[in-house]
Image (tube, rainbow, N blue to C red):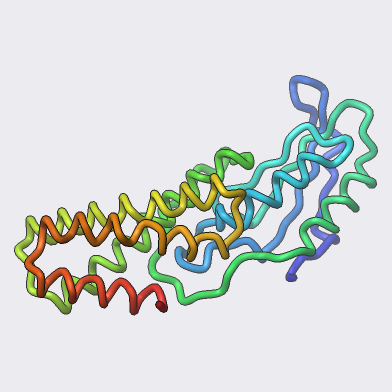
Length: 213
């Protein structure tokens, strides 16, 4: 894992309204493989949940791009012990490594995402992947513009569903493949109502190819 404890900064003079202090940890291991400039919500969520269980931690959160983690300390917590515990957790499994499918929208520099809110990162990732899938389908399957747009919406909705279900199951990148498979029957039923049988077969084949299945 590409983690450097030397980049951990204890901001001793920066106090939250509650009197808590913050630790900031930089890592390039939790960036989204599919969307440049985005953190991998499925990889980050279980890490934040584990950090939140560390003695002395009030709450942990990540930046939009997944490159910085913020750990809020409880009053009286030992920052060195918390930092060491966080390092051990972050030395576990990181994000997947795949070919980027597009760039994510810019995030707000002052916004932090806790374990539950990492679903927002995953939903954005689903949108980037859906746009890539839709572009590939449009290039290979002749579709009316209105049909192509509706298909794009269906792909995004079903991908979002898969990401949401993967989060509900506890997160982890590997769970996405499981949940993507589980939404395929619903996806195929929806496109069967929109496309001709031949178009539906072509689209299902492209989706399977792009998923690597």
